Image (tube, rainbow, N blue to C red; front, side, top):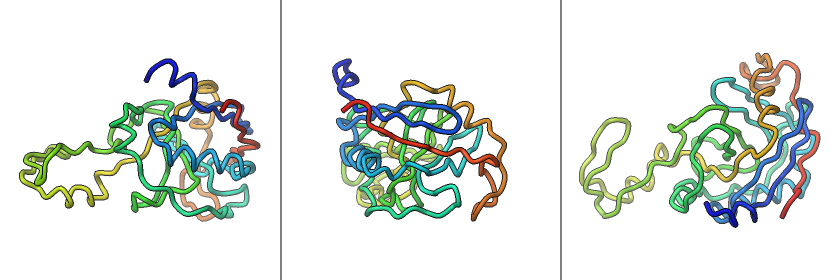
Length: 207
């Protein structure tokens, strides 16, 4: 990423009950994902939501539920841009990066996001070699040959997660969040902070 691109990156400040942190996002890497995220920020969607899934050696996830575990309404899902973002030189799922959460459907991301608290390369989209059929392709230690490109394009397990930003200040806050005691809460049997970690506000601080 060029210095000028980083300098132009929009930033969002989160104020939480565990402290503040700021992320920058990369519209040149994942334009639809970033536009979607910033619209939720402008709509104050994240204000009053919690980090409902916290796994100390993995990631912290939030942006979807209020403090009473009511799921907030969302707009239509955003198309998956993970592979394109990497091809444009975007970041991988490494410590401090910001990615969209989703269901098993790659194109299901709406408002929820997560912040990696360790390097999670298995969450990265898998690049596809050129050609149709793809002459040779490796995945999880196995080699596949002469696979129709459409088959790989439609393989949900190859999509990974779209990284679209990173924490640029307040990583100490993220480290506090990842260390909070967790258990059951609301509809979730595990990984819920026993003292709610609430996002009090999310504000665009640089456009």
